[in-house]
Length: 336
Image 1 (cartoon, rainbow, N blue to C red):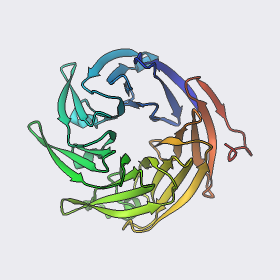
Image 2 (image 1 turned 45 degrees about the vertical axis):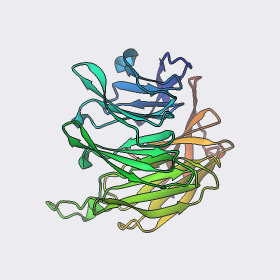
Image 3 (image 1 turned 30 degrees about the vertical axis):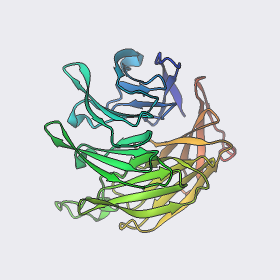
Image 4 (image 1 turned 90 degrees about the horizontal axis):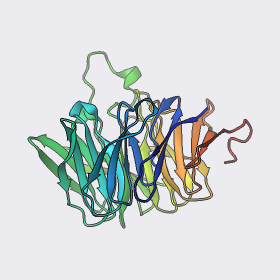
């Protein structure tokens, strides 16, 4: 069962409202343009076409505006919190071609870094697992993906994957820093051999998987199933089970669940979750990776869960902006 636990009036000039949903554990569902909870679930960052990024304290059901960050010169598409071991750090990306990294020092939020290396709108930002250091992936409409790595003393190293997606890149999502199968196979005391990977989705209708080899980023896999622009990708969290999982959604109204059962990551199989009647904008996993939230042009957030026989069923839906929540009865779960 899902329940709306709080509605935050963000007071953005275009009157975006953010609703926080709960299902087994709290997890963020990106709304237009974006709303993301921090690691502890006490702060909410939002962004909007009014060019601002706002941060709210949402503890105990409240909504106190603690920062109104101005620095972008166009609509801000996405925000992403870094892991708190690096401090209170937030990244934002915009139509103005910029990526801005904000940091809180002594209670005050300031711009700590601005990246202007893209030639078109930057559509997605995603922090790598904290095990790898402070690394931010950025996907742009110029077709490139940039990797920004903090090297210390306020310096950032930039690596760019040019022409990652023809026409443009819409989404990036990191693989968890867990070796597939390590939960049952890893000898105790042996240091795991982490390989950095992330997924991207683009206007070429493709989902791509990128792998770092000898300090360089190379295309490892090209996943083909969508018939229109891929709007979002989400790599599922993992505790070390053998299967890796990625969700993707598209302008074609379809959501696919991609799975890979071999540790080498060489063979991915798609399963159609559902064909919606409108564009699907966002997909987001719960922390435990057993529930997928899907947000689309039908103005609903639907929650999906996999059964023991491998079938995905809609277990609940939320009408965005109205606070309406309903559980889907047995027998109607695949009729959404």
